[in-house]
Image (cartoon, rainbow, N blue to C red):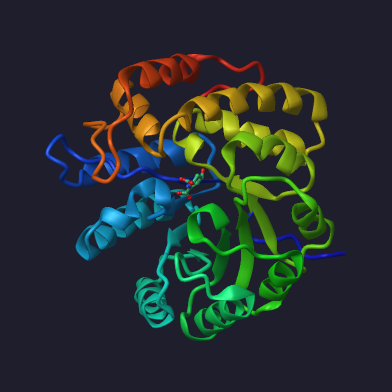
Length: 304
Ligand SMILES: O=C(O)C1=N[C@H](C(=O)O)C[C@H](O)C1
């Protein structure tokens, strides 16, 4: 029997709350982190794309990681941290800094964005990170953001690297590569869904969990969805999955995380819906529509 991967269940990539003046709001990060972990998330992801990590200063990133690490420690939950750069040496430096904190269970690392080094270059990148970074790695397979596709063979080769513990599957499709990956994942290797709208069929097909921006809202619902599929409770899972897919579609009607921040602010959970350029705030009508769906009580879950 294959060993179960360490990363299963729901991981929530937290938004980064700002003030109306676009200053980091660390107290709101702490509150959100605690609420999320209290609502059934298995762990947190700091500095994901949802966190607007590309616009945070190095000091702000350290603050966000410190605050999320404290919440994870208090809940005995793992912290995953996003590290995204097209520069292998810079990524290693970031990973080493994270390793030194002793607080980080894994780093979520995309194929080098924008550079498009090919599969061999991507494999060499992750080999260097695994050897020298000092933190377990989750490969973020997101070709529509990175520009680099990964075949089933490339994913299998990445999965065999010591120190690579999983993949966040966000290719925009459940296709032949997905089926191949889920059919024979490397031992102990976690497949986590990252396309929110299709998380239900992906977990039904054997994924171990998800890293879902949508779960900043209705955390308990998304956690329950994953748990239902993993327990084999197909009928309620299908029903809840269909309902949450409509909710995720509403949250992704404009660039992520603008709608999520709008709804969190409307619920009084973050001080402002502000996002940093080049993102623009979501239209009020989009936020209203998603906020209505956020209130809906799903049959088999008590949404946060
Ligand atoms: O930050 C993340 O991690 C996620 N980001 C994705 C995106 O913005 O494209 C969506 C996914 O839910 C998680």
